[in-house]
Image 1: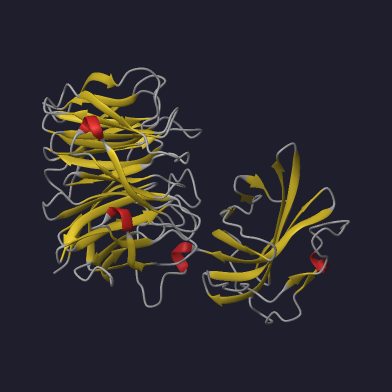
Image 2 (image 1 turned 180 degrees about the horizontal axis):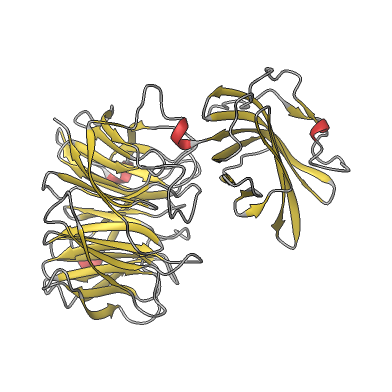
Length: 483
């Protein structure tokens, strides 16, 4: 891996291991090389996504700094700032945050501003009066630091936008001219299911919300005929009857007992449910009777403690995103004799989502992770025992790709802060972007969370001429492709 070097030339004078009286003393930062007037017109209220490069080791921890418009105390990853000198002429802040049984100081000093929405500088972390790490950082206002030449959208237009009255919208599935949006719950409220009638795409109508007591984290959704399958962190796969699509009726939860199912995927008469806990496994169900799934097998790869996340079935193979263990292919032609065929791993693996198709007689997989810098990898998986990286596509390295849908030679991607991206993948080694739509907006009424996992998160392209997108704050967006 090529060392990209520091973001900024400014430095924190004391070395790692040295004692400091006050870690957040601005005088300890050498910023003599920083251009004068870099922050002359800097806003006091804003949201920055901060990424660091440590001088003494990798650091993939994402930081989010929220500076409120009312001039109140800002926060970094939810913790209050101690020093907050951000505005015309300055960019400096610090916080003392809980860490283990003690605390750590995190201090950031701005140096230059290469573009209006981006700041570079240096940082330090201290604990118990000693320097732990130091290095450089970049702080980005995502909606002000788009890629070169980008605007709010290109090739895609907004047809409608509908708020989802649940905590954190995460995924969507389209069936029977209804959009089924699931949401995860947490400290900001409960998750559940929101049902929208989308017969008139420009005017969706919220028909119903569904929640179960004590079961509030619903992350994935799929439908087959009259059955709706929901991935629940508490009770596995929840089955609803959608014979009346606007009024889902609870049927059962499978396989029974407490189990965390994170995502679901249907191919033909098979339902795959990816369960990272309490034991990482992929559940394989027969859904030839859609409302009565029958468990056929529990798929667990050898030597893979990282945990399953998602999967895509193609032909007789199942391609599983197994987070830290990489991308794993299985032969599932015989559910009673599932065999691992091979896996692809990479530095700092966190395999998260994928789609597979055939191009020029070769089986090609499009794989994405989910951490800082996660992007698209294009793999030739024709021989699953020898998967090969043949291409890729990346955007701003400070953010993360998320879910994807392959339709013919177009790959539709929900890319968190980068919004929706549409790639022409007719030449798989060289994906080419043909359209995009930025969904993320910094000042969004009702926003509950910021951070790495904000923006476009879920996407479906059912073939009706529209793209259905879930944004973590804005809710359900329906887009159309412009000719």
